[in-house]
Image 1: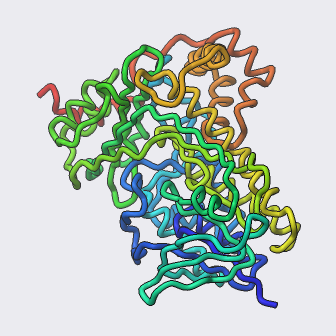
Image 2: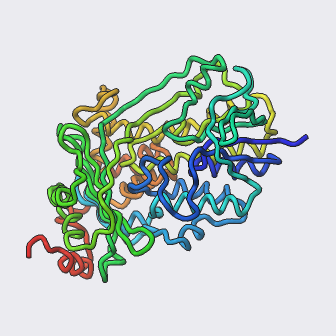
Image 3: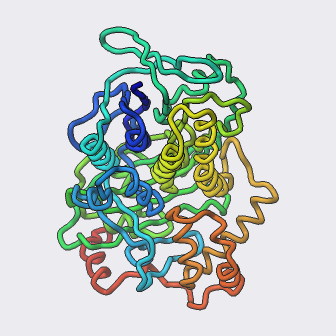
Amino acid sequence: MSRRAVVIGAGLAGMLAAAALSAVADEVVVLDRDDLPEGPEHRKGLPQGRHAHLLMAGGLAPMEELVPGVSMRKHLLAAGAHEIPLGSGMVALTPEGWFRRWRHPGPRMLTCTRALLDWAVRGAVLDSTGVVIRKARVLELTGSRERVTGVRLSTAAGEEDLAADFVVDASGRGSRIVTWLAALGVDDVREKTVDAGLVNATRLYRTPEGAGRFPLTMVQADPYQGRPGRSGMVLPIEGDRWMVSLAGTRGGGEPPSDPDAFLRYTLDLPDPIVGRLISGAEPLTDVHVSRSTSNHRRYLEKVRSWPDGLVVLGDALATFNPAYGQGMSVAALGARELDRELRGSGLGEPGLARRVQRRVARPVESAWTMAVSQDVWYPGTRGGSPGVADRLVTAYTRRMIRTATGSYTAASALWDVMSMTTGPTRLLRPSTVLATLSGPPLPAAVGAPLTEEERAVLRRLDVTER
């Protein structure tokens, strides 16, 4: 008997889930309501698609496993993505000072537009599996509270029911999963939102001549001073371009859409390095602004009775403040959990979906803790405020970050957690705790840790003082 799996959503989470399902299902159908571009172009179904996306090492690793016969790292680099070593290829000002750059590269992340990444992943999955994509809008799930048996969908030809042995909802922030579950009789889904009111503003520039090897540059927001957060970054992307992404929280930190005000915002950050870099650069786009940035979580792993045949992944399960660069990695890690359970079970095995949903909650919990523990400190944050535990954790975390500005031991622990190669408990290993309590052995860096060659590039690009 033929076994069919249906995936709702053709974004990153959906295509990786489809790759996992292709190993055990006879037919995998991905449903998406958008017309998908044939090249690396933005589509409206991704509200954050025009802004900075960082694919951390912890997210790339499961992608390497999921797509049969394809090294996604090599595939993305060949498509134009850049590889950035956290330890040596990034210049970052934290609330506790400048990170040093070390001889050891540390974990690596990939930078490119989200459009390129989605297009490259979608193409790799379609080329290496039997997965097919249909344009359709899912109206509801079919089945009962005990088992999902398919979806009801709407197409240009009308409505139809599509039977499935397994359904994955990876339809993103706009998922209607809570409504769909309620219609089946599952009405005890707990949700939580923590919203710092973050606004993103992004503009693309042509990489100035001679600046192609300039490090990724970041001025991080400071959530601990009782003022709105303000941050900015310059990251290299495909096509010899820089993506300049600003972010600020409600109450006065929001970045503007006006091009002149955009530049002034960068120059008014705690260090003007972002503005100095782009002050003479050639802009290639308008400023794109987005406000879909809240942390929102659906605790589906805690539902009393979860229906067989249904798993929820990616942004349909949880969204995070995009400033922390976790969303894509969490989606990839969730797809790997699905893959591992599928390979040890059959699609129709009772309890499979619940086991997957509980396993997927682990990377979600790690990312949620890291994002929310900082966002609750911004003034005007809705849905959360720091409690006693938050204050203790924050005191330790701030001391550890301060230590990491001059300690390789602390810095490497922080890289591992930032890159999602390990969970937050990495920060509590004895060597990390000892380093944190001892403090940084090296003095604080005075100014951005640039090489002489990079300083010369910065001086040449900076037209703010001419």
